[in-house]
Amino acid sequence: MQLQHATLPLYDLPEARMQTDALWQGLADSFRKAGLDNVPEALFRGEDVYQKNVFLGQVCGYPLTHEFSGRFQVIATPVYQTPYFTGPEYRSVIAVHRNCEWEILVDAEGSRAVVNSKNSHSGYNILRSMVTPLTIEASLTKPFFRKVLVSGGHRQSLLLISNKQADLAAIDGLTWSLLERYAPEDLESVRILELSPPAPAPAFVTDTEASDEKLGLFRKALQIVCEEPEFKTVREQLFLERIEILPEDAYESILEMEKESIENL
Image (cartoon, rainbow, N blue to C red; front, side, top):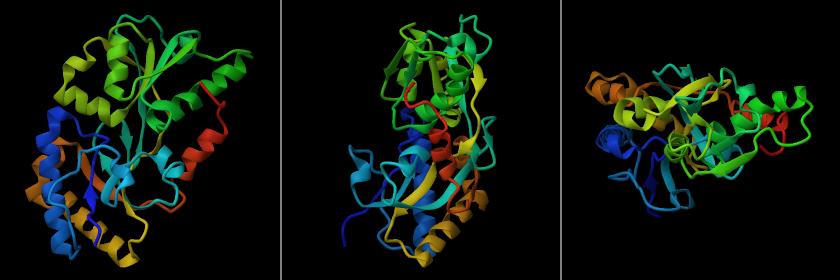
């Protein structure tokens, strides 16, 4: 059988790597006890992880409905206990420099935005959705932002704002909470301007050939990790509260958001 990989890259902060590895060990043990075969011993942290055979991964809703459409099956959507989650839906925080005098997003017209990736819901798609009505209401004939930079990651976006090389970014709410806990220095020079509308949170996924029986085993094992007292400490360290099984079409709301938005920032 082809080697399978497990990866949890979205929230894998170096400062919290010990906790993430501990979570994986708990998950891996639970998967084995549930009867799943070929469970990876450790998380894979190499390049192009999603081009490989994925045992378990976590994918943002935007690439899930675009680049990876048909590539993965959704196992479950995790719920995190932070101010930026309501059940299985999460929000981005609109971050600006701490000394910025803006009060609402419309004040940012003509400024410099920075996005982590154009293939991201939390950093790009949601920001595009938020500025669309502002662009229409103001009858703008030019883009809302004067310049849009691509940083390669949420932390890099925050660094550019801190250094005044950019003015505004949409940052995944769980990433913000993890930085508050594990790297508060990253947030010393920034503040929250607004919160975004909610959307389904990044999902736990596996490759498409997984049977319904296998999906059931995944869900059972995940549920155990979210409930058993022995995993309480690591769950709390990473804000993990529970999982939910959403309707199959839940992530189509991200597509609808895109359809109703301007084409580019």
